[in-house]
Image 1 (cartoon, rainbow, N blue to C red):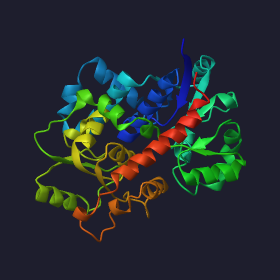
Image 2: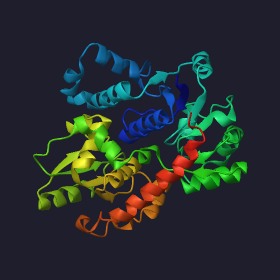
Image 3: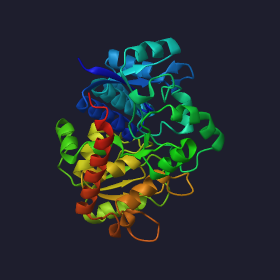
Image 4: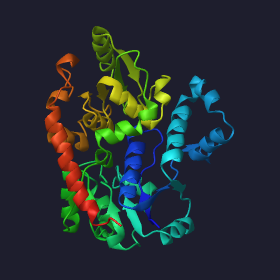
Length: 361
């Protein structure tokens, strides 16, 4: 009988990368011989009172997903519904509403998964109050590449979580900057391991989207922005597409297009079919690399500079020619040494495998 592992991670139905990293964590756990379950905490409410996942359950129960999809005013609900349905079908998830329910889940588990994504960021750490399973056996805690989300977390926040970090037997994080933060704070040896999506190979992802392949009638370019569009971004993308005879598919968080309401695996299928991916998303960049696609990287709107995780990614994979700086045409951007990137991916997987092997059942 497989031993159960409870996973604490952000659950955001409006973010493809968030759902895909959680999916990858479950695949890693199954490969390790474990039975994974994600413990989710609702953070999004409809009318300030009704948990969003309850609304999504009702949509599913009463078979009104198709009706919702035709109402432009409800596009955001339709997007969330597609990701919620993907989660329901592929990622065992239990919503935790109180400490008693959490304790019941913990007593049934042999291992405790921390992350991935930005579970060490103050925002998510406060929402997922058990994010580091403070009362559990330190040597039964497995880090699935959690991130602080920044290279300069608030010092008061770090002092607050220091006791919990000290209670993780084999501490590991996603970014080099996170390693430095955790080591300086705890004095512990800290592993750096790749994001969970990297642990699935190109063949794995293509196999996963085999039933989700998108139409090949037109050559496409894919746009996926988590931040708001900056005025000079989208026209340039459309201009390059027009020159090349490509159809632009926009699945951004703020997009109201029909395609934007796709599920996370269809999103991967779009990346696999695209001539080029234009994005400000860490996970979209990673999936483009895994699938050997041209990618143009934009700064996230609302930030003064490219965030830490993407800056490190650009350096690790030599993607300097993929970064849009506003002073060159898009046609000159997006190419990189695919063979070199594939070697880095393999090294990343091997290093993470060494970390995970100590927990394999």
